[in-house]
Length: 140
Image (cartoon, rainbow, N blue to C red; front, side, top):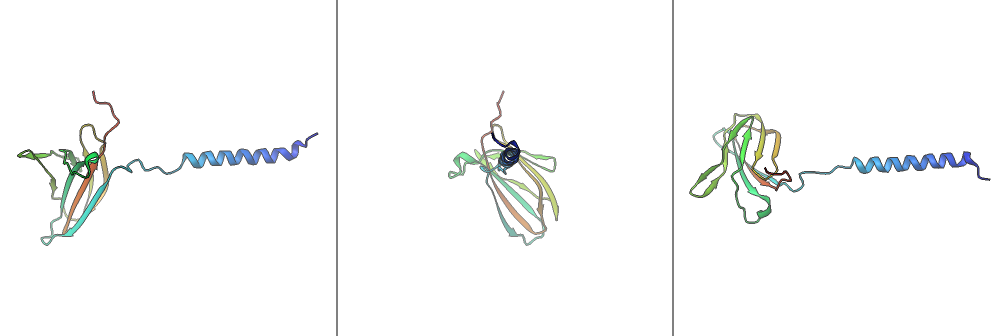
């Protein structure tokens, strides 16, 4: 005959270990934006007015640097893409000194990129190279 008092702690430990492994595997950190690349270059501007330049590219043609006409929203102000002579121009923004910006970059068929609390200081000149990936959403 088997002693059930000895088996109960073993079963409880096994169940606890199983539950712990399940919990750890479900809460593992997964970066959803691992295929989005944002490069920032910073240089000091001698006039004291900050500038932010946003260049949007297609992630699939990253090596070819094919620009796409993405819409940029900064603090709820929408900047339309500029197209001149079949060439897509970058979006240039002149924010106030020492400001926090909420930036959203979107294009049809691409995942929207959201950057919260982006700080830009006086005399900063920042260029964001943003690579947009394909979206899984259905277009109607």
